[in-house]
Length: 246
Image (cartoon, rainbow, N blue to C red; front, top):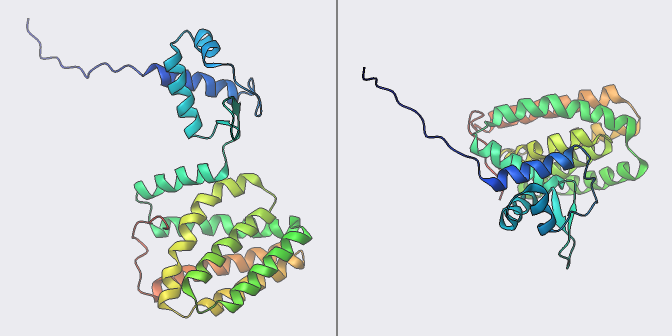
C-alpha cells in the first residue's frame, strides 16, 4: 500500500564543532585550567581522532569566543577566561538582532541598578569613590553637551558596578548598559536633563560615601525611573528596538 511519507533531511554536525565542544567541556569542567597551554594541533588530532585541519577549525571557533588565545608574538595556545568586552559584544549583538525594545532594556536596568548601588555602598573602596567623584565633577561641567554627558553617564554606572565588588553583576549588566545608556543620549538632545542627572549622581555618590545601602538603592531607583520619564517627555518611542551605539 502506498503511503505519503515525508522526512526532513538528516543533517550531521560538522566535526570541528564536535571537537570544539569536546575541548570547551574540558575547559569549563576545569580539567584544562585557565592559563594552561593546549597540546599541539597534531597531539589534539590524535586525542580526538580527527584530522589536524578539523582541530584547526575547532581552535579558531574557540578563539572567536575568547576561550583560548595566543600570547602576543607567540604561536602556543593558552586557555583564557573570555574578556568581558568579548562577552558584551556578543550579547549586545544578540539583543539588537532579537529587536529587544527600549522598555525591555529599561525594565532590566530597573531591576539591576538599584541593587548594584546598594552593594557599592557596602563595598566601594576609597579609590573607587574618588574615581566616582572625578566622574561627577566632569559631569557637572558637561551638562549641556549631550554626547559627553551620555558617555560620562555610561562610565558612572560602570563604576558603580565595579564598586559593587560583584563580578557576576558586572558581566551581566555590561551588555545591557552598553545599549541602555547611549540610547538616552537622545533624551539629552531633546531636553535640558543634564543638571537633573548630575544631581541624581551626586545623591548616589553621597549615599555611597555615607555607607548607606538603602539610600543608595532608593536614589538609583529614582534615577532609572527618571530615565523613562525623560524618554516620554522627549516624545520618544519606548517600544522601539534598541540600536547599537556607534
